[in-house]
Amino acid sequence: MNKYKSERLMKIIINGKTEELEVGTTIHKILSSNDLKPDSVVVELNETVIETEHYSKTVLKENDRLEVLSFVGGG
Image (tube, rainbow, N blue to C red; front, top):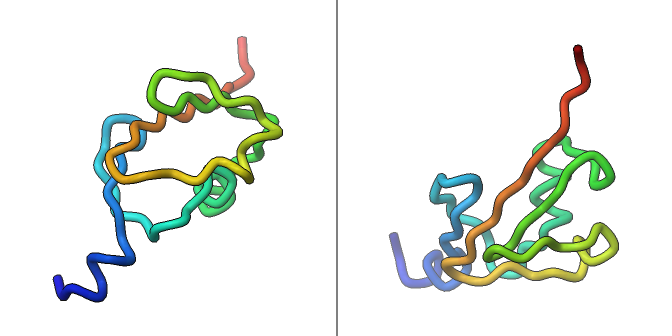
């Protein structure tokens, strides 16, 4: 990886899996890129639950741990 690319990427852990994302990525962007509706998931960032209205304002940082839980209906 060249220096320019590494300065623009960061590693975070999403549901236990390490991923490289662009610096400045928000929770909202991750949900959108995975076709998840904000009101259908619960998001925990570094063991703190993030309220839905903060998804677009919460910018992730290097080595953050994100847990995204979605609910599935059924019986």
